[in-house]
Length: 159
Picture (cartoon, helix red, strand yellow):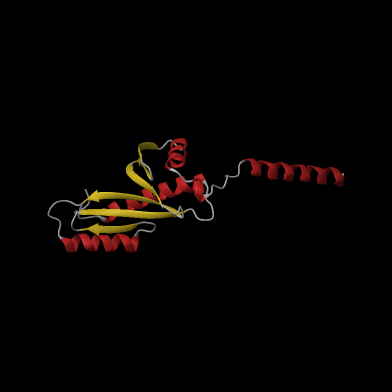
């Protein structure tokens, strides 16, 4: 009787182990990153591709987001540039930028007075390998960070 229970337990463990191997994400290497690789990855996640360039792609998942490939392929940069309303005071915009940088994790906000715009940047490191699922997850987190930063913009400075 004990042997039958032990055998059933081993059978359950073997089944769980083998099923976990099948569903494991494949590790991608940094040198695999190309605009085509990014395009296929995001298309498979049902994310709209707006543009494909030599070193980047542009996707749309609520927001238009550029995904630039670092020349050394150590990371990809997720970014977006948004206009500031005309007539916004520099000190108000700087206060908003500092608030976002201090309170919203993941993104770095940068203000360009000359261009009158706000840039958001997130670096997804690929060095050592990554999964496609983690890359898609990074895009979703970036989008969430943009949502949070817009909630911080109580003066409606960002267009």
